[in-house]
Image (cartoon, rainbow, N blue to C red; front, side, top):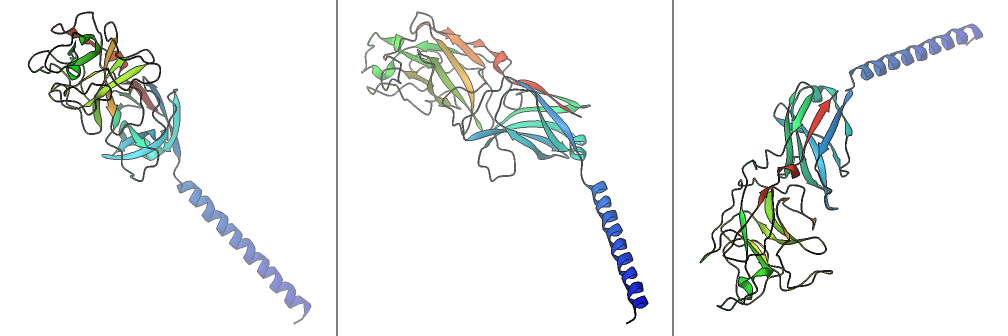
Length: 297
């Protein structure tokens, strides 16, 4: 093969390589033009509290009736901004905030949905209405110690708190919504070192799920509550005098890995000096319910 033929063939090869490069660049450019772009979703929420170490908050937008995750977070300092697919965000009908396990193999939202709001334009006002309507919540409690009695009153009723109206047996008197799956009520008494649980419950006319501090002389009445005689936590002295102490009903996620009350505390009261048959009223505490605004841009 002579020099001229080699030169022509080399020139053709160079042109072919250049053409291939231009084609590849063109394809890459086309792919870039069709790649999805993202927009910002900003959460400005109030009243949330940190979760236990095994759980996270997760945001969701509802697009054509289906949930699309917008990301997880643990910090409760706001505002926080997340990058979300623009087309999906523009078509979102609502925003939902849920509580999810840290190690979560389920791609769908958990039952513990805290906040929801419908988009109006580019903003959604989110509330806890999907958990329940607490606008007219109320209830009463009384001081008595049935688990320390053996058929007669031991005259130490200041060491126990029970939710309802005293009687034989006591009767429930809560005005509270029935909670959806993923939530339960929990009672608390604020001791010397912080809140002490009286147990969780979903029904008002039966015992709650725990009696960590009650006596053993007999069972408690068929309403939620607790006596404070046994197993005092560090820093507490039992029996615990309930008089003058704050009593709280919170709404807790299920499951719940935090020993502290959750942010939602719809009822709060202070025990007076009178024991049963006197009753003490809960006050409405709607200011504890988380709220906020979600914006897209």
